[in-house]
Length: 97
Image 1 (cartoon, rainbow, N blue to C red):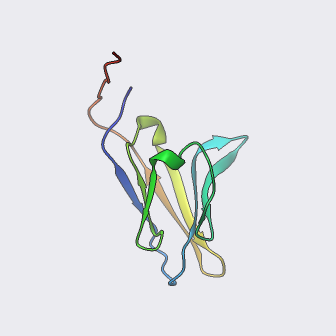
Image 2: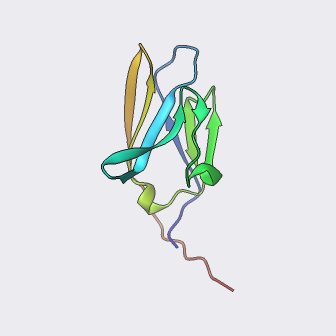
């Protein structure tokens, strides 16, 4: 299993409200929705997601190499912000007992 500690993805849009977030993995060409207008949307990543600063910071913990991709936050009527996350570095292997 390849993993690192954590990755914080910052949404640089600020309007005092919680943004919507989408990102990998893409299924049928569509990104996974993590939250919509600040409300968490259930998906397989929920157990690894944390939110900070009024949901402007999305933390993946632990982060895996396959988390590499484009993440976007948006606020209705304000705009959107896109961040590309490249996960590189040391490979950690967990020993299964």
